[in-house]
Length: 50
Image 1 (cartoon, rainbow, N blue to C red):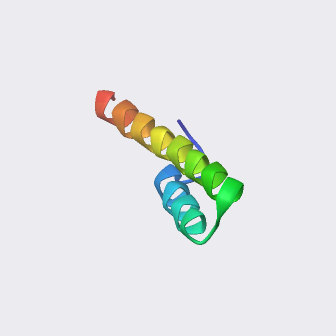
Image 2: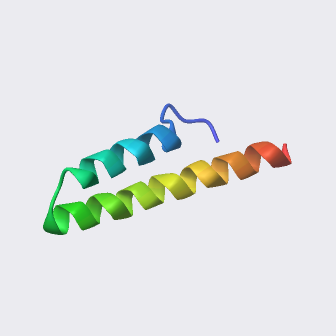
């Protein structure tokens, strides 16, 4: 997977924003961070297989 984004960095940034947020925004950012984290995990798994 070739992308200009670093999913791990994006996951950490989203969690930092979530920590500073409240209510629905916080929940949305947590879900976003989890999605980025899953992408980072998938990327690591793909690299191990290659």
